[in-house]
Structure formats: C-alpha cells, structure tokens
Length: 288
Image (tube, rainbow, N blue to C red; front, side, top):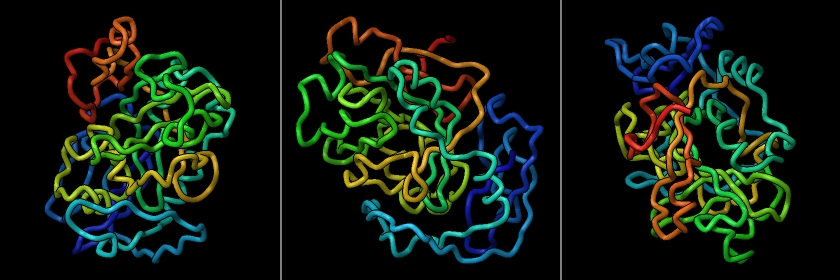
C-alpha cells in the first residue's frame, strides 16, 4: 500500500500502491527528497508526478474549524487521483455494526483504521477507551447538552472543546444510551500533508504534527458541529477499514487524575507498537 501526502508548491504527488508492504511493521518516519516528493520510510513506495483533477465534493461539507495561523481559504485545493480512488475501494467505510460493542473492545480495533475528510486521510495509531460508569468518562454525570452525543448510537462522532483550545475527536461506542466512547489520541498522515500542515500551522513532517488528540482534531478541521455525525456514512468525516497491527501497546490513560484510583490505573490506552506517531508519555506503555 502506498501513501500520498497531497501537494507542494512545485509538484503534485501521486503514489502507487504495493500490496506486499505491511504498514504496521515499521516505525513511520517522513522525509523529503530533492524532488520535493514526500515519502514514509519503511512505509511507502517510490512516488512519481502525475496529472490531477480538481476535486468537486458532491456532499455538503460542514464548516471548518479556524486554523491557528492561516485561513481555510488558503488551504491547498483538494486533489483526487486514481490511487486515492483505489485506496478508497480497498479500504471501505466501516459499517455501523462495527461500533456496537463495548468501548474497551472497540478501542484496540480502531488501531490501523483510517479517518478521512475530503483530501485528508489519517491512520489511527493511539486511542483511549471510556466506558459507562467510568469516573473519567464525560457521561459519568448523565446526559447534558454537551455530552448528549456520547449517549448516541455507536459509530457517531463526539467532538468537544478541551481547555478552550483543542477539538477532541471521540468515536461513540456500544448501544444507544450506553454513554461510552473511544478518544482518538494520535494518528499518522496518509494523504493531504499540505492541508494538515496548513491547518496545524506547522511545516513539519515529524510526529509532533499529529501526536496528541487536539492535533488530530485540528488536522481534520473539526469543530463541535461535527458531534453526532455518523462516521459510517459517505461524505464529510468517514472511518475506513484498515490493517490490524501486529503488536499493540497498553497503558493507563492520560490526564485523568481526578478519576477513581481503579480507573486511573486501568490499562485502557492502546497504541500501535513500533510507531513513532504516539503522544507522551510513552514510558507508561507496555506490550499487550
């Protein structure tokens, strides 16, 4: 499988897929070559330039969140090509049944899956599970105007604003009214690197770009308006099937010191072993 990171000022990149490469085996590191082609070391095959057409989105898209430094009007024009079409055919949208399970079971199954919004595709590398009756879960105080989406049916998005700065993307799990979700903590870039960098306000290709839940929300251009959006429908924000990781790391969740001791110490954080695209702290993670 080959990855495409969008376009730069001097060229448009199109990558060819190689089904013999397992993206889960090696650490994902990015680098630039002299021709401005962006590749993922141990993750992607060679790239070559090709013509592309402007992408016309047939689906009504929700409003972008505001980027840190530049307006959405300055984002690169989304590009579509035959390899992206092949990628979407090979990695179909997950059905709603996929999400109708306990959050603790759903969390590790989300690793390796792909989040897509228009020209941006991210691969999920780190998650956290939040269950019903969990003293760290937003649903612990019952349904409110803010937390109502987490009580919806599995397969919907729950996006909330953290510290007045960060948009946090969660995937609602379990049956309706369960009040459970999985937080997307980190991702690796697959398509649309230029758009990701523009939204993040960072011209880097290192894990700092997407290692952290607020960074993922910003890279996808999310706002709280995306809460209750069905991730199993075509258009807008989609969750696509992807390869299962060979090895998984587990550890306690981050930043929940207010919760009960049994929930603070619960090993409900999951990450792809060997990936660089994991947020801090990493020392608390261990092989599953």
